[in-house]
Length: 435
Image 1 (cartoon, rainbow, N blue to C red):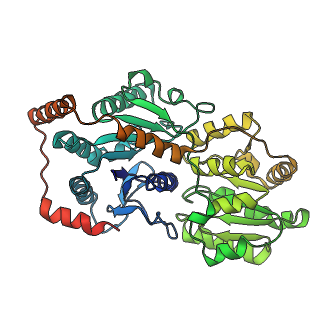
Image 2: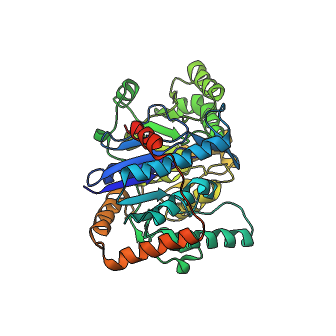
Image 3: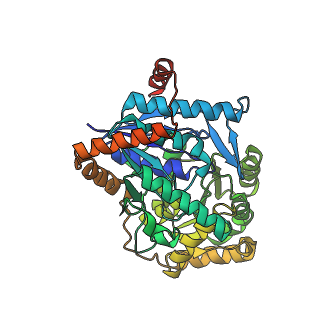
């Protein structure tokens, strides 16, 4: 069985972790998978049992600043340790394929560890294929044309030097890569449209006592969610403020999921509102079974992240989407949501729509509308696995390939690249991290 080393890093929310988990779930049916990551913990979140997990020291972003989860550790020391662990993991696993989620199209903040890893692979002589997997919309942050051009040029340079394939988790009917990456023609590797990645069916995911209780409640429901919870408190508070009035107008139970990163004080405020005046409102932090709630719901009200939007498309639930107020995410979420609104699949909420009267009007109107069908490809994870199986089964080693690796190794040597790690200590350390 071929081995895949899958690198993913969630820095702000949990979207990259959730999407990556669905991809490795499919990969693990055909490959020996090692999932390497290091962000903030998500209580209640579980990786598939058949996936080997390697945890790096945690990092996250606060605005534009990279920070360490363990505040007692200096950033520079954690960066050096992560870099060394990545190199050691590669040497220990000797994967047939390395997959980097997002990088180098995004997350350039992580180049301190990614470029040394890519150089190490290039210099190693191993026939490891390097693949980038990518969500549908990228590089939407505000930046000048010159900065965007430089960023895209740097991305093209890294892709063309180190990468063999790009797995693009989109459907060309809705979003093409060139719409957010104008330098597409300068990329050399194949770009394969996998379709959108969606959450797995319920039987493969954990079910806790609260989910068992609420998912078996009779009656209609509305689901409110804000992804990781770092953004979206305004939406949650707006729903909580109108819940008592809604209880007099409609029989729906409202299940609100605040996210693992919502500050504790804000969560308690919402739960106190629900306990004191809104018996129709249940406020919880997180569920791994969100898609089950959506399958039973009459309406979803949420931010517009990739995973929640795909769950809306998969379940066919009516949807109101309030694009994230985060400057780094609103562009991506607004673009996707507005395209779907034009197809009459969902309705986009603005800041003004969070006021009580317009928000209630949108909810009551949405509940009366029949769901709109679509034909988007939502099989992104299994199609990515099938493509990789095909890709790694072809292109056997040849003299030409070995000659290319030798030339790359010599080029790195001439450029002064050297990988210096204490292999015995760090390889044993990485091995101990395998779950």
